[in-house]
Length: 246
Length: 246
Image 1: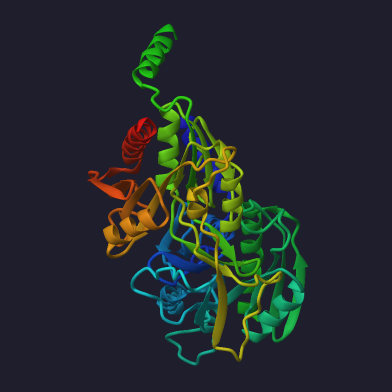
Image 2: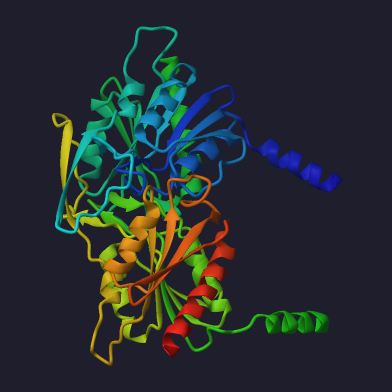
């Protein structure tokens, strides 16, 4: 037992705590937008990448709040978890933490649209109706809301990191989103490749960072989502600290 | 070790095999209908009830094929599993087994509608477009297809059991579906009650059986989905055997 204790002590001693004192808010998983009590609109997302980022930030000493849509994963050790279902609920959970967040990472696959008028009761299939037209309205843009510039000192803008999961022109779309939403960084993810992305334990991403409209590009080697999570957090931390000293 | 062997022998000896020689095909879980490579339409369904039915039928000696939509459950011991995503794929898997199925149980929450034209690439959110109209078309009715009367001796109609998951008028809708689709039995499930149904480990159902338009009703006591699965399989088996001797 003494041996275990000594071993634990030295193992923990090896992990430096560069994120100590920093507050992360990380979103993960899909959102589900109800059409009625049984049907919903959603996006593919296992939540693995967001959970890996949360675990890595906590390991490096950060105070981490994970805001997660419906997934089948356990909240990692040392991380606070909040479960939500819809984009609106995720927005509320994020905004309530905006003023106490240093680094915001939007890894969730938020549904862009929701039903204009979800039904209270199950919609019955109509025997004589082969087509159904569904009216959707745009969901709030959580990341854009978090990244909005403010002059309010009590509600400062956090350092904001987005994800761009695309099936084509991945790098172009990612850089456009980085500038358009005024983010500090964006992680680009080609989800058309089945060996990585949705549900997979592996991923391969490109990290773009922005400072005063100047973009830096860095391709990270393919690896497990856990290893990539660790690498991304370390790189984002370095860039965050560099920004603070500029 | 000898003791374990003796124990196993007697424990297995206790389970009678009233389903020996019978071939079950059971559907479970939701279907997912893609709108594009990242978005889909689905129904709430953990798959637990269908997996419990499959496990129970196998325990009672049946040869069981489980055709499952995307869920986070392991195929039960002694059960053959086929994984599908869409309603069309589920229909194909069921129809390919129709002629070799004695008892068909449709427990899956199949999406009634799918996108008329799923997109090959991720649909980009339009900045200037606050509304999106989605055109859906009706999916094939798997249960009605399986329950269709045939005169073809090589492709006989299996004994067909449906599920009715409703949020209101549960018993009325269930009996209507039982007669309209010419089923042998239907299990009615009130999914508006959060303590049972979706995701829950417990359930409370009413079993309706039909013979020549005469309906029998039996309310089963609330219990775990595993216990209910066992009870339902036993009751369905008894009714199936009764029908065969009529």
